[in-house]
Every structure is written in C-alpha cells, then in structure tokens.
Length: 297
Image (cartoon, rainbow, N blue to C red; front, side, top):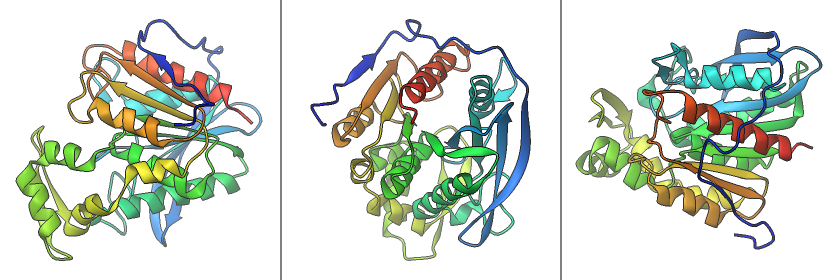
C-alpha cells in the first residue's frame, strides 16, 4: 500500500450519510450491447439534465442485473442503488453478464467463465465511453461479490474507471467458492478435462451447472495482481459477519492496491442485512457516492 495515501476506515455505518439531492425524474431503458460478438442486455438509467457521470454495476455469482430482491421494498439491491445514483446526478448501467438474466440469446450460464465476464465488463466500459447520453469520461464501477473481482480485473486491465468500489469482493477464490459449493466439487471441477460440465449444489440450496473452464479460471485468476494494476481511487467494503467473503479479502485488496483508498466496514453479512432493513445498504451506497464525489475529474 502506498504510504502517501493513508488508509481511511469507517466502522460506524450510521456516522456518515450523504445528503440526497431533491429527488428528480430519471429515465430508464433496456439496451443491448455487444461483447465478443454476442448480445449483452443491460438497463441504462439517466438522471435529468446534461450528460451525467456514469456508474457501471456488476452483479455477483448466479445473480442478475437488478440483484437480490429486498423483501421490505420489493426492489433489487442494484435497482435501489441505481435510483439513488440518479437522485444524486449519476447515470448508471447495470448489465446481465452473458448467460445470466436476459443475456441468454447466445450463451447459457453453464458456459460462464471469469475471463468471459471480464470481457463483458470491458465491453460495457467501451460502450459507455462512446454513449452520447452520459459523460463517458467521468466513469465509475461498482462490483458486488464475484462482480467485485470482475470489476477489479476490468479496472486493472483498462485503467479507465475514475474510481472503483468493491462491495464484499471475492478475493480468495478457493475459500469463497469452496465454501459455496463444497471443497470436493471445487477440486473435481479443477481436475476435470476441458468442456466437462459439473453440477454444483450451492450452500443456500440451488444447483447450478458449470463448465470446467469456470473452475480452471479459479486457478488462473489472481485478484490481487489485477487490483495492483489499478492505481485509481479504490473503495472497499466488508461485512464483519460475512462468511461468503471473509474480511481478509478486503484487507488483501487494500494491501495490494497503490493509490487513494478507503476501507469501509460494518456489522453485516454478505447481503448487507437487507432481510432486516435497508439501513446498512443505504449507508454503504451513500458513502460510496461520497467517495465518488471526492474523486471526480
């Protein structure tokens, strides 16, 4: 970690909140872009006014672009995030990675790989840079969980985000995926020949089919090398009660990164406590926005 950029730590999530602007009208549309010649479906949300700074939202493992539905509000975590972004003058693009959500015209989830998702994120960044309705020169990225490690790689390989937020980003792939699907399944996937399909039973119940290339990607991808290549501002969040992504991952991202950075922690699990209230999530969104505001061009 670069000594010229001291680590900032916020533990009490209620201590800082972002004053919201007066709620303004925003528009939302479904758009289709291309990644490696295949369709990538996304939601583009625009606030009123001139082309706005824009945030790319990257969902997690087996997720979709709206993300987990919050029981008390019946909206997805990324839907709520996009609305808050718009209320504060930011446009956003939330994508379905190929094989997820509505991005299934050319691809099934079984074919998902880390490198494929990184390509999707880079394609989305290129799309936003060329889009007249947003300010593509003022671009930010938020990635949650698996979306976090994809965000780290996309930022490191492109160098384009003006700031990057990793929300409970997977850092130790073996620990996280071994916990989610079991050590035996993880080992079998890594040992499987190319183009072999395995069915993994996830710790929260459902089964998911994955190609061996997904497991080989767990061996090949080095999240800390990816974030080390990104020297822009970095905002890392971590739940002290998270058992899917252990707190050591957040510390490792901070240690590997050279540049302005902030570590934000809260007493929460991997899902931001949304099954009890939106208080923690809203505080995290607000502090993420404050970090972006502080690092605008």
